[in-house]
Amino acid sequence: MGLEHVIAIERKSLGDLVMCVGRERERFERECMRLLAFPVRAIVVEATWHDLELGAWRGKTSPKAVCGSVLGWQAMGLPVIMGHNPEVASRQVSRMLFIAARRRYVELLSYADSFND
Image (cartoon, rainbow, N blue to C red; front, side, top):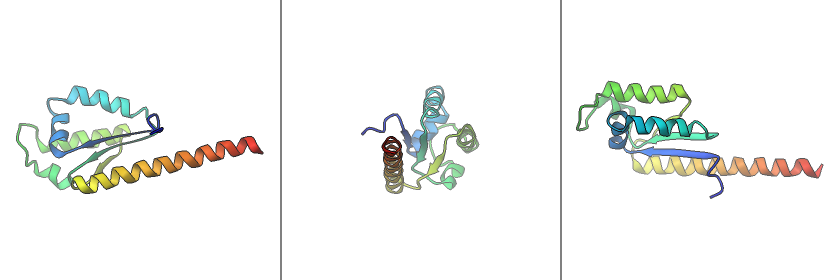
């Protein structure tokens, strides 16, 4: 709470990610553009890079398309963190939120101290 304008994290299961590359691509591209406005931003995927390359999902979206899209998002300036599984991804998101909150707190203290000098 209070960091809504500072941090945005998109968390995706492997199935969600594949849909974002396939039939929901336009919507997710708009979401990526929105993410770029945040100082702290990331896409956290509940899978490994190896999972992306294997392509063990239903549908016609190719592993090459999924891997290419992930690399494209990274080239846009969106960190993509491979969380391996939901539990690891959850810990990564929690840690990112904590770090962003701590940084914001330190920035606010520094800003307040500049008025006390």
